[in-house]
Image (cartoon, rainbow over all chains, first blue to last red; front, side, top):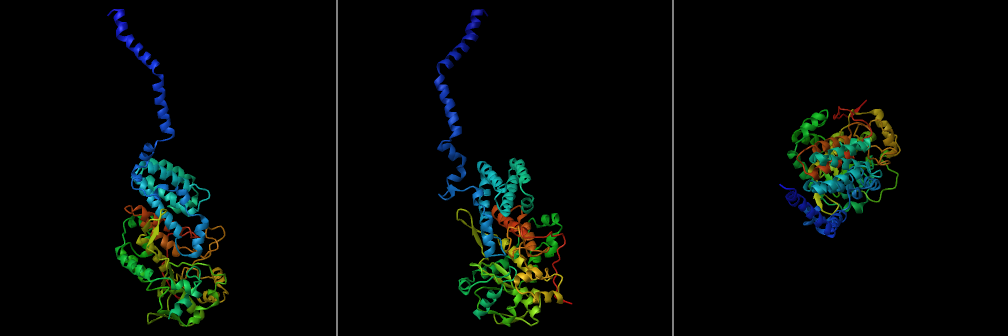
Length: 172
Length: 305
């Protein structure tokens, strides 16, 4: 093959590609911007896909669920209920238990929900203002979830290591 | 005989086993809790014991030591030996005679009555028995026409209140059924109050007799394992100031906690049942003030010299 043939067969196609890219900078830039936008602010369609398994059957009240930390009964609330009924598990603790059960059900049905629930449980365990009984129940649930989804195991161990000894003892 | 039970409710304020309640509040309570209880007692024969053996093996055989075994029959026998007569706060056909025996200084709570009181269940038989011992008077419980002499802490008289429920709700207001095991753990807790472990001596009785009110009784009581009455939670405890703790090993909270933990150990149960039983176990265990050890004594004795 002559040097002229070599130029036509190998070098010219590359020159053509480089020229094409140089002449279409706007199109390339737009693509980058779209990708960036989708990461920073998901479109409604992308957002709904994250919670797809719940959104179709959610009621209005269910769709505005609060984080677990905000649902945990406070120490003051538990004391008030114990004053009214010394003997038994405070009703707000039972309600919290029922709420956590629903969250675990969601976590088992969706990986995205599992991520959200696990780290909400972690926040509950490590909340310095939390009641120890609620912290212990959250830690129990984190352990249960980690048992079903091993990818949380190291996160669970980290959470347990940062929880107080009393919370860990009660959770077992 | 409606006035009889109202009288009992008004004077009961013994270390967490009873609280003051007005007649108006009492009359609003239905028979539903007792009906639920009857159903729960039937369910004892069908207890799901999955996970009990594994729990027992890894926990010093505590279940076997407490209940005598791991079969539904064992759990039923534990209750039958300790709880026999059940009635609601509106039951018109119960009374105690002589009524004067239930008005002793060591039972009195001089603090202002709380605005609202909810009672789930209260084993008041041991209280009647102690009252008879301290007053040195025979006491009889009248139950639907039957006269039951109170001669043992295990007479088994159980008051069921509006807090004995079948449901709770979650954060979005959805009603959910509580597992029957939750109420069973409550019954095992109450049953434990029937045990006068180690018996009670004449000097113990004298200490009770000389107590001027229920707080003094709780502080001075030397027979702490007789009836396993609750003590006031100490300073710094989450329930500080309330008679919501156990000051001795293997009291009622410990018994309820062991059962709840064993049920929570069932690998097949729903997230709801797991959470309710775990919450129950955590709540009970948080009220224990002393280490439990590994050898619960669930025997019961009477008056000794």
